[in-house]
Image: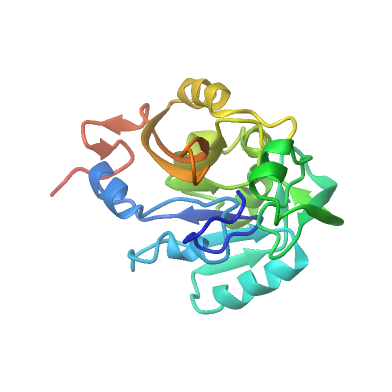
Length: 247
């Protein structure tokens, strides 16, 4: 998402996170307190859970060298926060990242469209960088060999569907998602909100919150929104089925 006035600094990265097993769904929604996070920003990754002092291990992924250096520096402040220099997608390999001007917050593995060039002219693509790509399934095997309380936060500039395609084996263990989704095509070939919501619902998730991520400052037309989802097939009343019964 292009930078907007008043927004936290953003970059092209990813994060996974696991939480404790004794929270009600209501508490989780209020405190955003468990799971895994994928592709957010160096300022927002750990800060997304900053109010939760009992969070489980967090793994963040950033593909661009200059942004990973900042992510790695910030992660040293929390022993439960791990940083890796990776992009995430549908399959492992190498790819060319389109790096934008300035901090590079609008960088993407997909080509930029005229909507971004028109409404964020200060962030043109200025170079490319070869990046290593892995999948959620691969990194979960490495960092989260057990447990079924993962939360996945995805901010991948149009690459959301590919990231989810690389999480097929892990999907039953993911109980919550937060994704930045587009209402208009900002990156060529991305799946829009109208396409992604049916996919998420078919996987057993339900949208519980939608927030503005990027909008036209004059007309207030929405370009991107942050969507928070939880699994409906893992909820019994107000408790996750994997949780122990209250004492």
